[in-house]
Image (tube, rainbow, N blue to C red; front, side, top):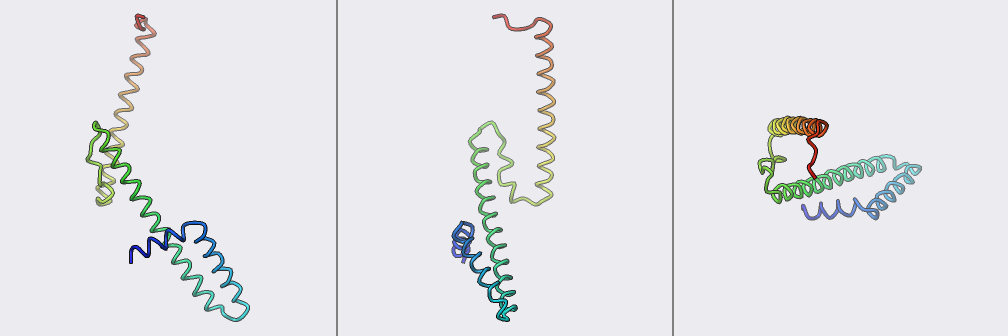
Length: 132
């Protein structure tokens, strides 16, 4: 069943699938003057549900692929910490806690770099530039 859903989502997320849905909606709209309002309403409701499913499936696939790529980058950079790998599977409060921790660390590093840059600039202004 998953394979069928992924194939349908893949087809419907590309131009031919989009055009197929547009043709189906136009055909349904053309049926309204013939007193088939209930059929049209039903068909368009089903189409909306299908489109929503396609968006969710494609979003899941894209997000999973991005996480895999980011995990690969974290693993490849040996000086990075690996404790964030798999964080997308954690509970929401754990993710928020880790995000807060990383933001605080980034602020500390930025403040440290700003201080180091200011000290370097002050040293250069006083005459502590390069000897070469």
